[in-house]
Length: 74
Image (spheres, helix red, strand yellow):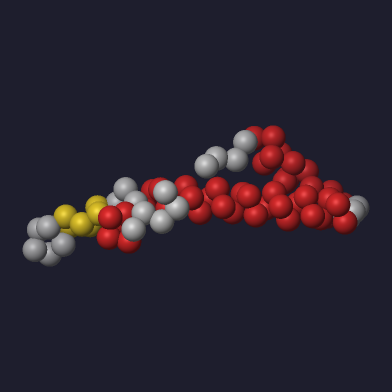
């Protein structure tokens, strides 16, 4: 999952507006929803990266973290 550029720009626009003049209730709700979507995208990206990591144990065996911990989110 990847967040599109327009949504990222809107998050930044709302953050600047919040500092400068404040937000309406509708804008605060929009900001919260966009932030939640952004955090989910970051978490999924991190899980995807971690699922690709292989650990070499002291005995020489290779263990994939994604297989070991269940590839959550995929």
